[in-house]
Every structure is written in structure tokens, then in C-alpha cells.
Image 1: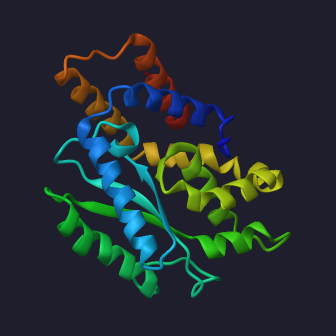
Image 2: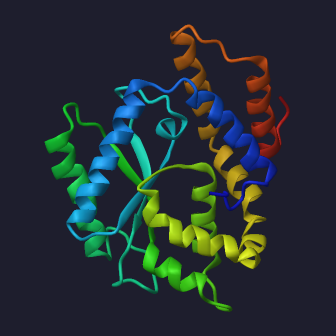
Length: 231
């Protein structure tokens, strides 16, 4: 399916880099993706509408045994149509998070690993916003479009209807696309991206894989454009 922001230069650059690393996906990455497919199936059977998008090493496919799994949680929750779901305000969020961290992780994973919910998007609220003509929560629209443009997902059939509705709302995409440069620039100012790419490079080097100059140049260009510093 078409990515919401696929034509933005930074998104294209990021995804080209990601595709290179994914060619060298580790068995651990494949195993953990499989874990979350199982988690989503079980949680859905319990009556919750959930899906996941991954960031970090699992998104790039080079997860190691000691790596954490950071993910976006998509949750269908009718209790919070006017605000986000989080640990403080939403029982559904707390129950799903507990299921993943305390029950499923211990029952189905031989070597449990740390996980972190980076963000949570309430699909019911998202659907409501996608139908509006005014008074729209542009932050929510942007977050969904941004994650769906750069992340690796599990149980995407849950997200497909919302993804399709968003693609039809070209007005929302045009309104939120300018947010991309600032978001990535602010993220890179923390040095997180630079350190992550270096960490991924080292992991491949340890396997005897040298990253081609063409890919290194893409990484440098991506970091330069988004952080505005001299390479």
C-alpha cells in the first residue's frame, strides 16, 4: 500500500537506508516479529483491536539478543474518543501492556526481552478525526501518517481501513507533511539517530559485512539534510 509521506525526500532517504539493512536481517529480528504476530493474534482473540509498528533496530532488521523492542501500539478504544490512550487514563491500554509485558512475554518467549511503548494511537479517535472537516487533531493525523511511512508493522490488516481513509484525505497529508523536517531535525539533535546508525554499522561489520559507500553517503546525506550540520 502507498505510504502516506512516501514522496518526501527525507522519508525516501530513510526508507532506502532501511531497505539496505533489512537485506541483512538477523534471525533474532525475524523471531521477535514472529512473537508479536502471535501476541497480536492472542490479544485480538481476547477482544482487543491491536496492531504494532516498530522503530529502532527491529525496524531495520538487525536486532540482537540484548536489544530492546520499541513499538507504537495501535489500540481500538471507544472509551477515549477525545484524547489519547495512555497508562494513566486508559484501562484498555494498561491491560494490553500488562498482557504483553507480564503474560505473553513470559509464557511464549524462551528468552524474554525488554519492550517499550513509544506511543499509542487510539484507532477509534483516529477514525473520528479522519472524518472531520474542521477542528481536526493534526498532531494525531501526522503521527499516524509518519509512523506508517517509516515503520515496520504487525497485524496491518487492522490498520488498512484507516490507512486507506488517510490516503484519500490529501488535504490532511498536505497540511501535515511540513511537520516532517522539524520532527526529524529535533530528533537528530539528540544524537540518537547518529549513534543508532553507527551501532547498526558496527553490527554488520562484526558479521564481516561492509556497508557500501553508496549507502554510507545516503546516511550522511540523510543526517545532513535533517540536522543541518557539515559532514
